[in-house]
Amino acid sequence: MSYTRPNAEEPKQYIIVTGEYNYTKAKVLMEKFAQDVNQKLAEGWHLQGGTFMSGTFVGQAMVK
Image (cartoon, rainbow, N blue to C red; front, side):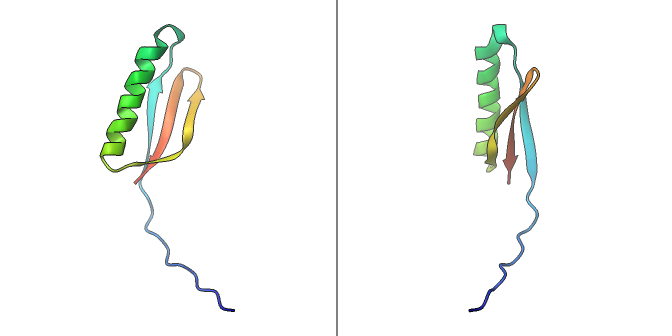
């Protein structure tokens, strides 16, 4: 049995799309965040993992 190592991929570009989270304006801010993520998807970016929250910020890592 032999093992062939696959060619190394080129390094990927990555970005983190962030949005603000505020309980009283949650719907409006999350819609803006979703629009920003969808815009990047339309530009050819791909989701990397799930969304995350840190304090008052929400984010999504993306790779190209």
